[in-house]
Length: 252
Image (tube, rainbow, N blue to C red; front, side, top):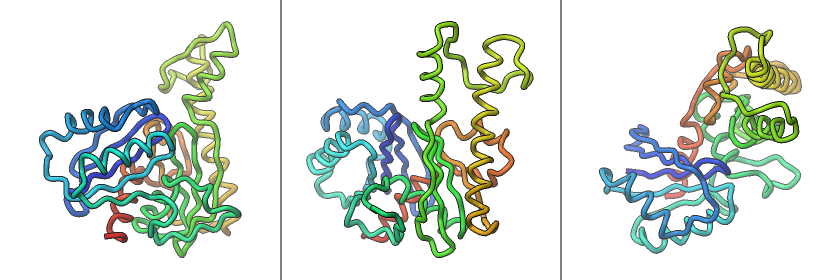
């Protein structure tokens, strides 16, 4: 089986592939202080029923974690082929940015997976620590995009700066017009982020000439926002893992 590891700023997602099929996935908290030995213990516990790991595909947006992950692979999986999405890895994704090295590995993986699954032009909306809008050309190029503060970061900032407010569960309120502080916060957050998605997608689509084959949502908080969005057409929680699988295939 192929083990795909997507290390984000908030969570780390593991996926096990049998061929092209994602058969199992796990989500754990990302902690930049975790050592290679601790990662081995965590992964060993999660994967104890799946010892047949034939390859590993890895990306990380956290440099400190990438260093420890690299050491873990070299120490505990020395005979298992592994591919890390970083400068020099073959991805098949031309990056049309002023400085291609600035682009996160997760955005490259999402671009490859989106174009492979849906063609282009396409837009990926990744609801993570930040909300990423990744624009994929008809040829599968990464054209650029937009970055916005993520849902949880925005709520935490609001609560920390407003003495009368407190953190609330991110769910749909009874009505858009909140009748209490909790509902008002839920309404502003949920419908505000849905409106942000629709507004940015509409502007990107206009710049692309109005022809977009798919708007794909991914990331942990995507299921909460998608029902309120008018522009998202697809939901692929495994998009980044699929991108890792595709990059591994190109490099082995």
